Amino acid sequence: MCGRFSLSVTPQDLRAFFRYEDQPNFPARTNVSPTEPIGVILGRGTARRFQLMRWGFIPAWVKDPSEFPLLFNARGETIADKPAFRHAARRRRCIVPADGFYEWRREAKGKQPWLVTRRDGKPMAMAGLWETYVDREGGEIDTALVVTTDANGPVSALHDRMPVILEEADFDTWLDTSDEDLREAMKLVRPAADDVLAMTPCDPRLPLSERVRFSAPRPEPAAPAKPRKAKGGDDGGQQSLF
Image (cartoon, rainbow, N blue to C red):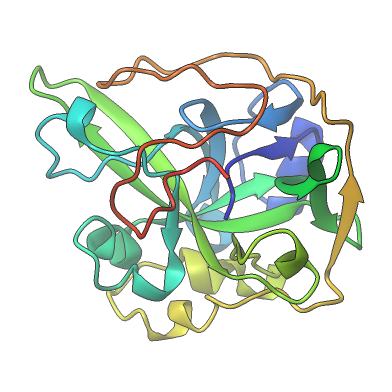
């Protein structure tokens, strides 16, 4: 599961790590939430590029986004088959960069947020899918989501799902959509090794990120500072924030 994440690495360091040619300038955000703009990495090898998209995937065939559930996660095990994701899984895979992602655990004093990061301090590369949605007036918006898998041992203490975390050697395999053969990409849909991630408890009063939103073809729900349940929809209930 991934309903909030942090990205505070500098634009220069992120560009150097993912090796794309673009030179975007973006602010540090410690609490990125669905419906906000996020950076994604597209293309493979020397053709990698950085692009802003709305975190909230809208399949191209949706007629009325206001009546469609908010899709910010997709279960990796079923992306090849579900109508909402199967075309993007074959042709439009991306990487969502982050410092780490948050999960909440109910404890005696209330819900305690934990930040899950890489132990080696490198940026986290979360597997994603993207789609360009065209509304009835011809307006376009690029949308994206994070692909999830079963939680590894440590993360399972917080939640039974986690983002698919890609290693550097696997970036091009995930980003390569030159054909529609998903076999190699689907091998990457797996939990991170138990020794890859670290978990740190956070102040429950997480600072809110800049509330910069896309003008999206659907009503924008207010993003709360604390997790709450969203209405369900496709993908087995993964539309709830936490």
